[in-house]
Image (cartoon, rainbow, N blue to C red; front, side):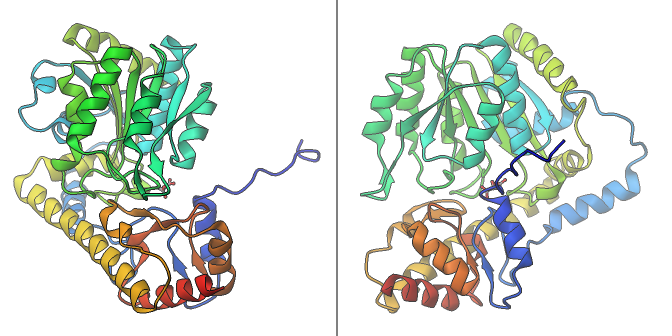
Length: 398
Ligand code: LMR
């Protein structure tokens, strides 16, 4: 069957991890995949997660199927996190949430659902965007378009370009937005800009699909939901794909959610019915463990407080690494102003390193960076930062 088939290329992000694992250089550093590392270079299991798992191990009494959309307690807690306690969306019953296998699973469920009711639509993604966005929505059958987002000259947001492009998106099309900690650039909108974008959606009639994979990694759980709140307040239809991979460190438990927000509770009932029929034919119902962990942590005030502390510690460590990287490059006289790295948010920074430098770093130094120059700051530690700064300085000296 495969004799005349050309092999598929390795994934641009997860393929790097495979190459990193196979690398025998003891100094190797993985700044590729968006996975958090602590000062010891480990991806830890959060203490609150360990505590919840202990409770689950003792108290869990059955492994029977979950409902197609997952445990309703999980959905309620997800909504509280997305919209905030006391949100009008929750009180009005305007959101349908289903537990999905990770943020990617949520995006794909949303894509398949949208394809049924918006078969002619185009999906608009930011320039640049997470490589897998294109794969997910193309595979769901959508043609893609791009809107301006990152401005390489200012290394910030091209908001004027973004607005101009979003104003041209036809009614009925779908615009994929990064709710916070834009991947790959680390450049975000402020709350006022979010309200402006929601207003364009309302005026032009396109629909937003917000990818919310990094809640809590920008400024905080509440601050990071500004985009969600702007769309919720506008009373529009929109979708949210959320993930607990990063903020709970539940990467391999594949724990996320797809939330469909509608203008009314009656429409939400219909949306939920179609969400369920979409899920049934893909994976039937979700894997339980990660959702149970999240439900246990968020449902207990002590564990929830511990989670917020652990999340803040991850966020602050990454910010400290941003500062150390900028200082380390300046100290070595690396040409150029890298201070933009400290104003970008979340795990990533668009480093400005060319693909040639990215390849050199991998070949000569076993430092792994995603093509395009995206650096995962969470892969830096006080132990490897000098090695990385030295290597970048050497690479840029040519
Ligand atoms: C990333 O962008 O590195 C993460 O979202 C992990 C992934 O699945 O690509």
